Length: 207
Image 1 (cartoon, rainbow, N blue to C red):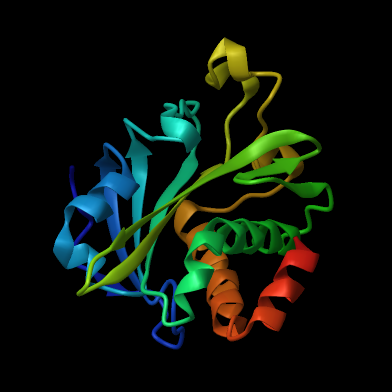
Image 2: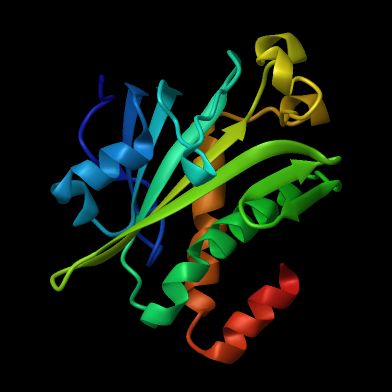
């Protein structure tokens, strides 16, 4: 586990997501790192990024096996100042943020597969895992996002080669930090707009 440095500003103009960045060469799991470190959980607006992740987890406790190309592995630490009943919808918000981010790059075949996958042309490009830590003192959600940025089919496990894709296959050239910054902006916009049940219903319609 090697850090590129201390927590640094990403964009302080944001309110909920992606205000600060902590960047590592490698972590077992960005979600696990956040959940195991109280000082990290107490930093709302922080996003933790790893260039490499060795023990990533997917939904239902499944292991996520990334290919050997470039990926985005990140976890957003969010303290919901919105109503607590919106916390279970955080996977929806994160998925919509990713969908909007990659669509803004010019990808027209993106879709959302409920509850936690983003597809391009019916092939998986992104997985999302949201976990919460709720105590009397603190309410925090960790939104983990993994995206395939580059790499050919041969760089994925054989069992996945027909099921996954990458951004580069669809003509997108972007670094993991550029991508996390783009997603952070979309996620912050969504969370800033969730102030009522009617606003949440509008999000569901977009989904």
